Length: 449
Ligand code: HEC
Image 1: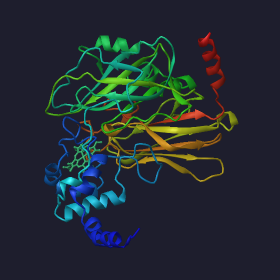
Image 2: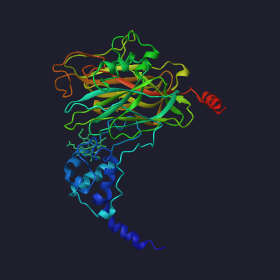
Image 3: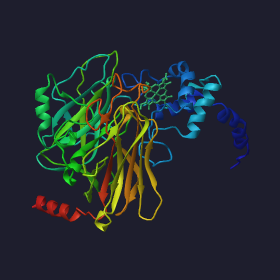
Image 4: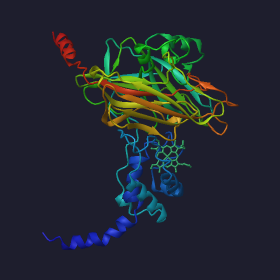
């Protein structure tokens, strides 16, 4: 075979291909991969980026938002843990978009365009094992943020292991984030009954029993701590559902109700919403349970406690969770879910293992309550017995914080309300020594009989 002429052709084409990207060839592919999950009709982004004309119209803004890293929205800082579903641009992708805009946004040859994406909203992981839906549709108020909790009985007839959840907003243009809490107390139904219309208003949590941290919690023991962490994770726009690694799953008691918090964000559009939740049961045998371990600020008597003085800026609240130095407590972190409210500006979690220097587990430098959710590690993080997990939450409780919900700043303490705060990291851990496989095999054997 004679490679000569094709090699020369490649060299001749090289400057055209690498020096000046075109929409049809490079840019459309980046936009499909990194922008269209949100920039499609009737989704969370305010405009679609589906065609050359769309992209060309927005070209200067595209250059600005990718240079400033405002887009695509991806909160965790790059060098503090690597997570599944990474949405950010690679340096090369970012540079290609910038070069394209600076070259005058050339279209190139439409014959080079990739196949358009299938934009019909399907469950990304296939049909869920259980689909739950709000009992009736809800119409959020127009032009105002609304955080609303809906109680979803699961209808399960046996306890289940869950390996993934997904959410399908009924009306994508108004649904911002969704969090799935678990309630085993029955309180959520009472709250629902006491509030007019479908669901009930809630903010930093489901308002049920212990999880509220609402004063009826005098001292925290292990079970009340785990109650705070009782959730199945959450969803924010543009997020792809991720299955937990084989052998790891979340436990769902058949009697628990799922309390789905939906944040309807302020838009001029309105209309009713009936959001759906999909649950995926673990297909592989489950070896270890994922437990959401809460790292929260406690006072000396073990009570939830934090205070942010009125007007304070760059104010840190710190929390620490010490893992007992007993080998039973060798843990592995599979996921992490940081949580603060509207005064939060930055949040950072690190693990200090015995005799080692601290390792960053996650850092978010520009916290935004509306882009919160769980992050699953690419490589699980070891948290051996004797480690300390340290959380630092930074707040701006001054009038300069445009998100400050208070008319005039006041001292802020822990609570679930819009004007209360939280400093919380739920660390999705498994116990290295746990092995449920023999139990699974027993029950499987029983079923076969
Ligand atoms: C996870 C969802 C999501 C993804 C992915 C996403 N965007 Fe956005 N984009 C938004 C939302 C929502 C807004 C509206 C402003 C806001 O809420 O931050 C927006 C706004 C914008 C704006 C206008 C911003 C301004 O300041 O005027 C541009 C330009 C933009 N996006 C470009 C992009 C590009 C280019 C990509 C891909 C590289 C992208 N976006 C990926 C959700 C997304």
